[in-house]
Image (cartoon, rainbow, N blue to C red; front, side, top):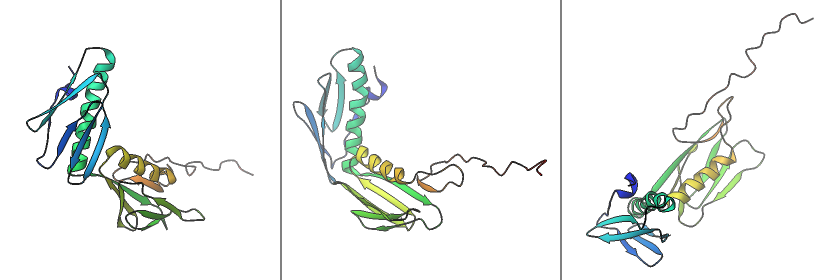
Length: 184
């Protein structure tokens, strides 16, 4: 039995889960999310808890058991509290400007880079070098943050670029270690 799939999801009082024929709808104070459910797993909602079971013991069913439980748990957390991913910009002259639905990045290119938020995502500017990406869909929040990081990923020599908050960037030594010997 899957350890993750076997765990029940305890629903907060403000969250409602509806199971349909081929999907699940999770409603909460921050919004509503839907997810298609494969026929290999069964979702039951009773007494403020969500239980995910598999119909048989085949390999695909076992794989989908824990996945489905994790997706539903992420949906419940998203509509109740929301998800946030923070980014930091490191570099001289690097800065961010903008608001909730659009940000403009100055990251050393000859032009500013404009990033528009998709539906369900909000940008926040904590300082002029720190960005927060927030929303109710964990996958979408992570993907938008990864797309912003991909604009100027951190480079290994000076560490300049856009990185996730708390991300460790391995640094390289560079060419400073070579000495000139026997040159005429």
